[in-house]
Image (cartoon, rainbow, N blue to C red):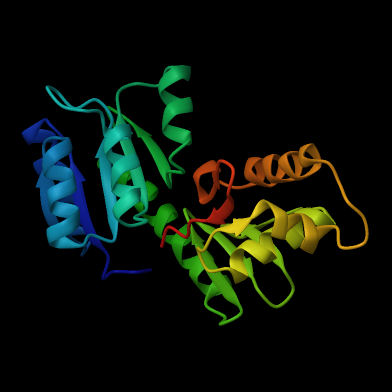
Amino acid sequence: MMINEKFLIVEDETIVALDIKKSLENLGYHVVACATNYDEALKFVKEKDPSIILMDINLKNSKSGIEAAIDIQKIKNIPIIYITAYSDEITIKKAVKTNPLAYLLKPFKREELKTTIYLALHKINSSYELFKNEDFIHLGLNYYYNIKDETLFYENLRIKLSIKERALLSILVEAKGNIVSFNSLEYLLWPDYPVSKGALRTLIYRLRTKLEYKLIETIPSLGCKINTLT
């Protein structure tokens, strides 16, 4: 178990935040800061460099914890565990889009917090052990690409790709964040015969649905590129 993890707690109720902090410290973990709102959360991410975040979703007089998670991921891909009293379908669907490690409902007991932390860290460790091989590239948001055999994984689960999807992803990864023009993609993917513009658009769309959507960016009239969010 990774005892050197640095926790950031984002919770607008001071008593709850202090109780979580005490529980984590009793387990041997280091809490770098406690934030009460969106602005403090982003500030501490930049200043304290946490390795895992406990994020309340409903932050009073502030943008939500989900909005904070989205903007934090633009800075650095930090694993997030949501803590919230809200379990409605709309909230959960919004939270799931940020790929959280776990979702802990309030009120929770300290033993539930402990179990959630242990399982979340085990999840991180399992992915680390699997993908520490030099053949793997972390694309961001827990997506990994094996440059040797051109396979894509989300955490430790392999994502099935068609031959053309695999070829497209390989081209974009090799471009290392540079824009690859639509004309170049058409030639590289279909060198023996011309295809319609719709065929390429459909292929790009299919690949984007198998990744976090923002990992592949299309630039109108120019081409597309991969955004590695490490």
